Image (cartoon, rainbow, N blue to C red; front, side, top):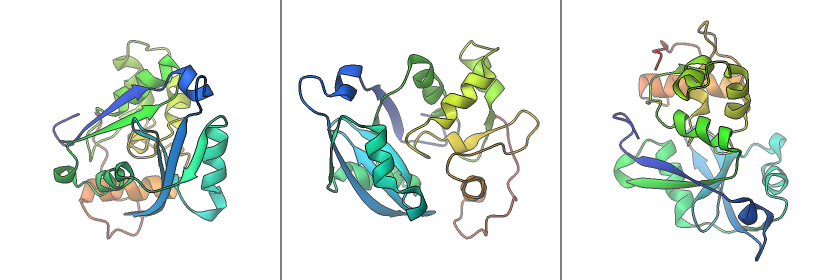
Length: 203
């Protein structure tokens, strides 16, 4: 949580037992909802949001979800958590005081994702800055890999990471979408056309 993001977004790690469905299969509900930058697939466990990605057909979002959670019981069912996630994508913090992300990852990935949650709206950071902040200054490349593995697009704001030289770098969900997201956050509007108009303020 930071001054510009009054909603408390936090991560509860998913255990390997939960991920593998030991004891009982993990149940994941998903729905497809409209977001400021197009439709998204939002998925959740009973504990929190576990997956979010663009719902464009070329990505085959349901198949991607099933590949990410091969042992889970996955069903199409909208739940309140999905609507809360989309409200956050719209920056409606007044409607969502907190949101739990139930994420499966390595300890290193979880450390990087938690650090990303501290980057304010309208600012960017770098892979090297993250590596420094988590006390692993020689791990900029692994940090980049962890950023790219983020399973909840925007909720963990991986789009707010750029290269040390200020260039955009890559983006798992298309660089043009990264530009649009940064423009929207920098300008406070969804009316931009996707041009590079944001002024990076390093965090």
